[in-house]
Image (tube, rainbow over all chains, first blue to last red; front, side, top):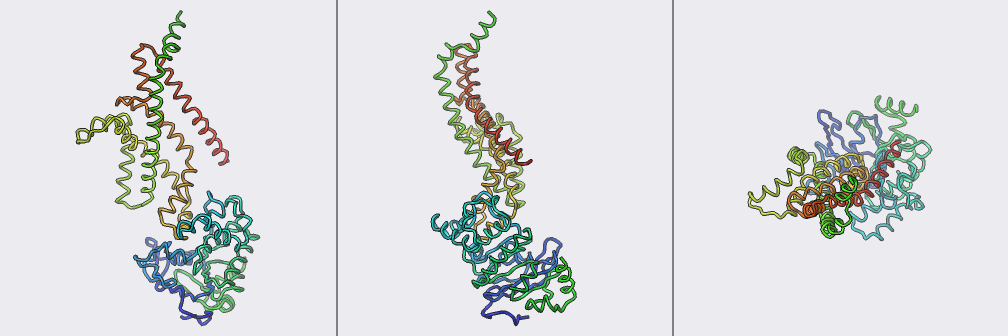
Amino acid sequence: MPSASSPPSQAPIIAARGIHKHFGALHVLRGVDLVVAEREFVFIIGPSGSGKSTLLRCLNRLEEPSAGSITIDGTDILDRRTDINAARRRIGMVFQSFNLYPHMTALGNVALALRKVIGLPRGEAEARAAAALERVHLADRAGHTPGQLSGGQQQRVAIARAIALEPRVMLFDEPTSALDPELVGGVLQVMRELREDGMTMVVVSHEMGFARAAADRVVFMADGVIVEQGPPEQVLGAPLHDRTRAFIRQVERH
Amino acid sequence: MAWDDFALAFFSLDILREAWPILWAGFVQTILLSLTVVPLGLAGGIILAVLSTVRHPLLRWPLMAWVDTFRAIPPLVLLVFVYAGLPFAGLEVTAWTAVAIGFFLNTGAYYGEILRAGIESVPGGQMEAARSTGLTRGQAMACVILPQAVRNVLPDLISNTLEVVKLTSIASVVALPELLFQARQAQSVTYNATPIVAAAVIYFLLLWPVVRLLSRLENRQLAGRR
């Protein structure tokens, strides 16, 4: 269903249709359609094993869907002739466990793809990396290695690593799940600022409060399908399906 | 008297002075040989280790057979086989080329297994993160995975390198004039064991700093694990 709540409804920047994914005998995604408008902030929730992370990882082809089509910013992601590395530059991704390169400084982490993928000379890459660190409020930590940073700071460096490439969309895979509670706020703040700057974002997360406050649309997934979706006040406030109700009750009890 | 005979046979300064130019030439050869076979073996090892991350059955089985074969054949046998066998295949090889090939096969297989373990010790999320920023598989390997892999298995790499440098002495069987070969030449000319003792001392002085470094690295890794 075309979501009536989508803001400035231009042509969709993400259009994933009929996505199936099998892991051996496991049918993890069973025909998922996800269409995201430019500047839209979509929140995907659902119980573990519902396929939400797999869906996200299909969008930049970290997982190869078994069937379906994905177009992002006009590029057919699943076409064999597509230069996937060029496409990934425009699709930023942030992981649950940060995945920073431990042998490099924060600056080095952010600058690597600027040098190797875009081909900037070292000085220019580092200047742009420093600017990206500034945006996540970690300019003063540029010389620190990941081991010297808190989890929250590491995740913000990971966000800087992605946004330094000036992506058209950002994918967040449970960005705060591995963080101590007191470190979550800083990461959400950075995400809020990204949203204010007009970034299109798809977030898999259990931060219901954040979803209520900031999301344009909440998508509830279970058993490899989208059960329902709509504005947060509808999906989280007055869900139509029992599965959704049960899930929200369970999550909010904590 | 017995002691004098012993000292004369093993620690004669006169003999040492006489044999020194020969030994020195051998030492230089051993250094050059090591500087050839260690990088060659490392290069072979990196190729094998990186290929082993491609989990294609068409690649996997030949790779395994390759590594197993060249780890199971004694390096001395391999060297003689290359040196004496290749001419029958129509390939004349010099002693130096034979040694380079033999070490590439043997040492490469060992370095390959060490580096493979190193690559496997790097969490899968590292490759995913690198690829998600648009790095190619090769770039991610070179800039993200291998540096961490090498760091994780550095003591094993150094330990293997020690073995390789010591193993260059087998080049003497194909008459390559490295340190041991030269020492034995000197021994047979002088009828005296002093050159052999001198060769042992030279090997020791060459490798002992590396052995110390290795111990320190191993201790640090043990401490890090605690």
